[in-house]
Image (tube, rainbow, N blue to C red):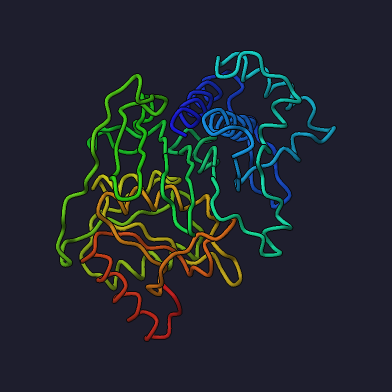
Length: 342
């Protein structure tokens, strides 16, 4: 999984550095996808299948080959193959192989909707924070192994996130960082988003303990919706004194909480009848858990990663234990005042 995410990170850097930059395709839900997203997923799947055996890979991921296989996107498919070859991440890639590896091991959505959830599976988001990637801000390459509805191994590669806190989130020109975690074995960092255990020494990530009355820094999106701004500002007011928010895209937010650069990962609910996606949270949640945080939805309920969804979760909260309890209490007061879920 580390090698697959490292290759995908290397490819994203190559695409960003190309004269044309990241080329967008608009998906049916009007969200953007780039050829780097699709190539990255193929690289992650291909590398995991190499280590597990192709037949063993059961995959629930964000992207599929469907859009790239459309006749009107044939030029994008040719460019995707060229990017894989030119970047050196897959020198002998072919169009058919690329399409096949994007979908390799995928569980059809219909089977998930019918309740046929695999007992264990991998999930991947080859570029989490696509808008950030396109705008040359923070983004991440993420993957996780799910067993018994919980992540047991995860990788979050952050190609634009410096290991030095003083660099801030706008210093995006360095080697980046990679984080990986294993249940009951901790969270670790590699000092290169495209590195591996063969090329770099890893460092244990353990966030410092903080008291409940510590002024927290809360993660916040760069381009939040008006509704999310309102929820965020209400929580800040309820908590009282807070520090400047950690404002960045993608699951890099989880990384900065895990390493102590921020204190609270806070995501308001997506809206009525809209569950959180498993690939948007499982990799990052495990980083924070193994670094010393606890997590829940905004009602305090445990998170369960079932198929493609975080089942029934009303938002997501992750923080050190005392701070987690304080934020839950603040959200409870907000609800009692008639403001709905925080």
